[in-house]
Amino acid sequence: MELLSTLVLVGFMVVLLAYLNWRGRKGIRLPPGPTPLPLLGNLLQLDKKAPFKTFMKLSESYGPVLTVYLGPQRVVVLVGFNTLKEALLDQGDDFTGRAPVPFLNRAVKGHGLAISNGERWRQLRRFTLSTLRDFGMGRKGMEEWIREESKHLVDSLTSTNSMPCDHTFFFSQAVSNVICALVFGRRFDYQDDRFLLLLKTISATLRFGSSPWGQLYNVFPWLMERLPGEQHNIFAGIDKLRAFVKERIQKHQETLNPSCPRDFIDSFLIRQIKEKDSPTNEFTYNNMVGTVLNLFLAGTETTSTTLRYAIMMLIKHPQIQERVQLEINTVIGRERLPLMEDRKSLPFTDAVIHEVQRVLDIVPLSLPHYATRDISFKGYTIPKDTVIIPMLHSALRDEKQWESPWSFNPSHFLDQNDNFKKSPAFMVFSAGKRNCVGESLARMELFLFLVSLLQNFTFTCPGGPDSLDASPEVSSFANLPRKYELIATPR
Image 1 (cartoon, rainbow, N blue to C red):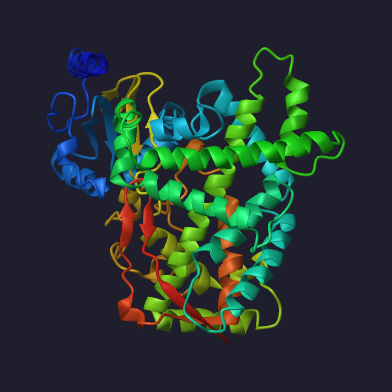
Image 2: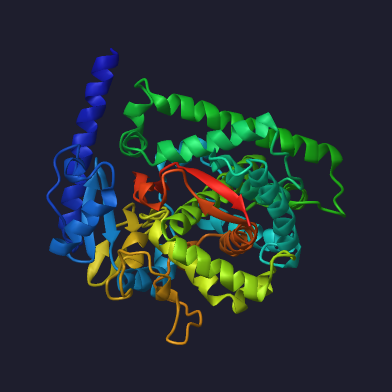
């Protein structure tokens, strides 16, 4: 009976793909693309370890707007800075939809900010941005949290006594504690075993989601749910994260003072009470759990991974590390902690941080968008229910925008007088109405943590600069750098 059900489902998917192909070619002009196979679509053509490379190659034949099929799902891929700008900025209202990514949907059980659309997305995004700002995101209050946390990070690295160490969770603990301050109203000790276990779960989740198996789950979730594999362990770990979030919410409910919110959870609870009788209320318990999970996961791993990669690139380029330290010594000295206002006086340091983000290219495919209605774009029609991938990678490597897009070159962000200069193609945080809600926080963390670290340490590794491989270990949803040991020598 189980086999028969599977065969019936497979047959249905084949028919569905045939229907999608028919609808895509009858009466509308779909973007061009390679011919798909039944059920599998164009999956066999993809580089499983780095699918964005396949999309870049296909764009050479089919242009900057192309159609592919990932299994039965039609996907339109946008390639190049100008194409992304036209879609995400010039036609921003058309491209605000978020695709129902099965892996993310399963992780948050269909709730929260990251995968929502329509009125739910508008209400949750507006509330999240305003509340995080109220509690200091991008402002002086948050700056003090980060500066204080940087002391704990420096102490942790000092405790290694200049011996080679795995620094992965030093960085993730520091970064996560900043988002914990915003969301939970507190930080956690680096020796807290439960906190460390949660951070390991977050790391494993991102790694699995960026693996071929994780991407296969997004294409055939109904099949992957029935097969044995790592996906079941990952979701069990996410359930533990959810239990932790629910526990924190429960404690907040028990001690809530509606006239004096302490953090994001308190503010959500207060809004929940105010909106309970509203017919358009999206401030539900499940959306609170989902949104807190979104912030906890996204606010931890991406920034800490960028910090790890930044140190790797400074080890690989010791002359750049020395120049950054000289600039910091000249402007700030070695005694006081850095301030955000120092950034304008540290143009080379700022350029290095931006170039690290550009080269790391942490989310090359972005979070997929979605056509919530038929979209006219560049002479084509993108039909409703089409997944849209705005390839951030293609903007960060656009040869028309960058002098040497494939090399690590901080001069990309310096003018002829060595002053910092912005680039519109710097789309690390995406662009438009779906850009990252934590962008200002991430920028502040990267600057303050990295400057604090370089004030206090010179970084090397056991095998020397040439032993480090800067190519990603995993490269699909996210580009994840290889693990390495570093030596933090006090200055």
